[in-house]
Each structure stands twice: as structure tokens, then as C-alpha cells.
Length: 343
Image 1: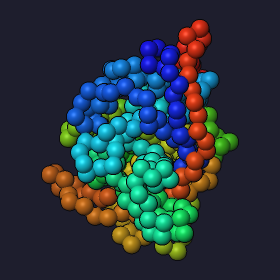
Image 2 (image 1 turned 90 degrees about the vertical axis):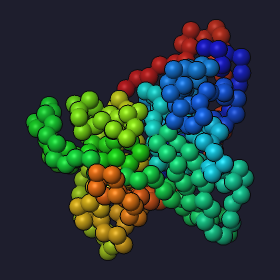
Image 3 (image 1 turned 135 degrees about the vertical axis):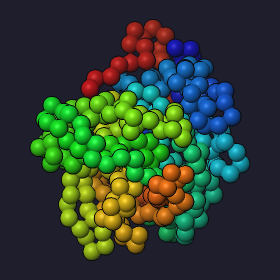
């Protein structure tokens, strides 16, 4: 590896509802491309050794199979504060809601974006799927919460039959910065809980790869967004006084598990629930994770797509907290190099 062999890599780490987010904001190679989307293509091609840097920071012994992070980049234009390339153990993703929440808090914590100590500060961020925002609320300077405002989201297909090792199930597909497949955990004989973690991962991977190349998962608007990014296995927990309660686990990339309720995945659920009338325009989804952390989600109506499909703009609210700062390096004599991953 050329980039990290001779330099210390500084990171600032946060967690959003239990899900890690490792922010790298200095010492990065310059990537070709005029937009974050174009820079993602360059990163996938390992321009400047940046994919090796991803591996170094994500893989063991510096990370783990469920690590997540982002490289800060210039924005597409002056309308955003900065851009970000999201990464995980298998590469670079197009969207990340929990990361957007963490980035909003980080930007206001550090003064990169001037923060209102008694109000809401909008942090606009360019990501590969478009322009998003984190609306960071503070009272007396103390964080109250941050709301991830996502891109236009919509239902792709319902009741798609998928053969699994536990029998045939029906799956709903929706888009919210990435394509997600939603399946009721009970239809697979499962519930969303840590005690069934291994089985949930296995079925999540099965469903993702069964649908990844399907016609339904091809995104005509932008082929780079095609493919199923994650499988959302969900439980219905009834309703609170103003909306539904659900618990989910999102199994994304190739078997990585989101500890939070998944920001973009929550957006994908919101698109489905708004479309079916389960989540009304004035209601709030209480979305719980496999470790019982919570996001609250609402939606705003948006302009319909060219084919007439209704779209919504999900708003997902949670909290993020700094967990530490790190200085990483790679000793040239280290035979493990950029590390390894155990799943």
C-alpha cells in the first residue's frame, strides 16, 4: 500500500444508534471527477490507493466486519458544505443515513459548519446518490438530535417471489438512495433479535443475491445505483399513539449488519409504509434496531416520477456521539498488510 505506509492516518469516530462511523477528513489522495458520484467510481478503481486505505481502516485488526466510515471530499458545488464517500468492508456505498446523521453532528461539533446553540443547523452534504442534509438540533449547546433528510424515495415492486432455504417468500423492493428488499422476518420463521443473528445474516444474504441482478433491481435513472444494497428483515410491533412501531435488521453489502435501525433503510421502509397508508402524512414511524436503539421517521410528499410513481422525502431522526479519535498507520514490515475480515 502506497498511501498509508509512510503516513499516520487521523480519524474521528462516532456512533449513530450503535452503528459505527469512522470519519477521515485529512491526508486523503485527490480523486478525479467533478462530482462525488464520479469520485466514487475512481475510488472503486483504487485511484491514489484510496481503496487500500479503506481496507486498512475497515479490516481487522483496525476495524471489523461490520465497520463503516466515510472519506470527506469536496462538494459538487457551493450549495453543500462537503461531500463524502461512504465505505464498508465490501467497498463504497451510494447512500448512508446513519453516516449522514454522524457527519452533521461532527460538522457542527468541530465548527466546520457554524452551529446554532439553540436551534436547528442545516448541514448540506453531497453523497453518491445525490444531495442530502442533516438537520442538527441543539439546546443550550447540547445535542438534542439530528434529522437525516434523504433523496426522493419510492416503491419499486411489491410481492416479488424469492426462493430461499426456508421456502418461498414475498419481498417488497424500494429505493431510498439505494435499493432495499424488505421481508417480514416471521415469513422466514424468524424474529429480529440478537439470538437469531446468524440466521438473519444468512437469509439476508440469500435474498440480496437472489434479487441483485433481477429486472426489478435495475435502476434505469442511474445504472450505478442498480442492484440490491441490503435486505431489511422486519417485525411488526403494533402502533404507538401516532404511528407504527417496527423492529428491523438490515443486512447490507455482503452480510454486514447495521446495528442502528439503518438510516437509508428506514427511508426505504418509509416509502413502502407511506405508499400502503400504514404511515400517514402526519404520523411517525418508531423504527427499532436489533439492539433496540431507535430512529423516528416521517415523510414529505415530493414530485411524482416520470412514470407516475409517487415519491416521498424521508426524514429520519436519531442521535450520534463521538467515541474517540485515532491515529492509524501501516508498518512496512507488517505481513498482514491492510488486514483481513472474518464474518
